[in-house]
Image (cartoon, rainbow, N blue to C red; front, side, top):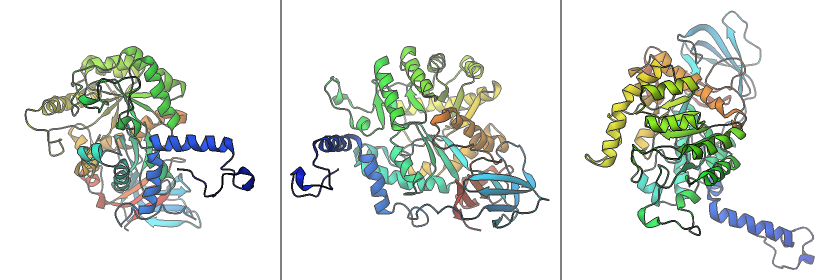
Length: 486
């Protein structure tokens, strides 16, 4: 909050401090009111700095200072994000936060550089997770719903550091109050990935983003927002006008893209998996508002009906889509829609819902559709992105690389790594001028942003290497080295 330390309210006594001028009082009152309603996120960022978040190995350390000299990676093999094989006899020169050049082996090294001898290891682009919820990924659901929001944010800051140390230098966050976390990472308060934020998940009443319980209904015009709304996690909007308002609010806050719930989910109690959510007019209102800001809408949707409705409304990306059929996959391919898929399987990473529960039954439907979804995406050449969609589990959050490695069930290792680097980078570019970081990601080429990994072994031969963070010997983000165990 904002207060003046002066002991008198007589304006004549304050020739330097202006806090008691009437117009300043009005501004102060408004700022205090805003902070009390929804500004706890900014306070959390300050708290994060004061507490020195995270594990001693990295999260208590500030972001490294800008390197004084260019960095040259030598004695390496290169996966550039697009090629199906490694390149030998090259060097990668980083200057500032950009890749200045990829040099041939016969070229002389530039003078006055810091050299990193890779010892024959592989340099590759930083990995990108295109479907994350950083605020909610590692904290149990019950804790998320009942704990002080500041605690949840502090946990999220620690999670962000772990995220980076797993080789994922960029996160496309598709729902949650990540704006303060992003700011704290960008200014060096805490360690973490680049974040493309969507802000609050926009949902209809009884949609997949409606976290209210039965006793919260009916909602009246004078009823206060549910705490998940006031915290910026969700935004309940019914009708074109409300959808427009909530979409524009997220753009106001700095969203790089907009996320709507267009169909039912697995985990929630009040929106069946088969349900279709929002009308075409409502979805189109959000898509038009985003397009006016030169960005796009992505939607949570599993079923063919929800996919078709969303595509026809102007949505540019489908999250999940595991129950898609041939026609809906063809439609995505024809319209150039991105398909953000996750390797959901009934394996060790499956959420342990009770047998016979509605959630377990829905989950089994999704798991059964996963193989078909990846097959359809390949058959119709739909632009496919990789994401994890980890929620409420520290164990699952630590298995990002293992989740990525599962894609060899449907793709070659080179295709897997391309999807998590160059392809995901192309999806990020869909935000256009709303992209929070100017520059190309997911590739190792001249003028691309310098997010690089140096990894032991050849991940094109043994994809499981990316599942163990110890194999990442150097982690660089934005031209700065956050890990170096050479």
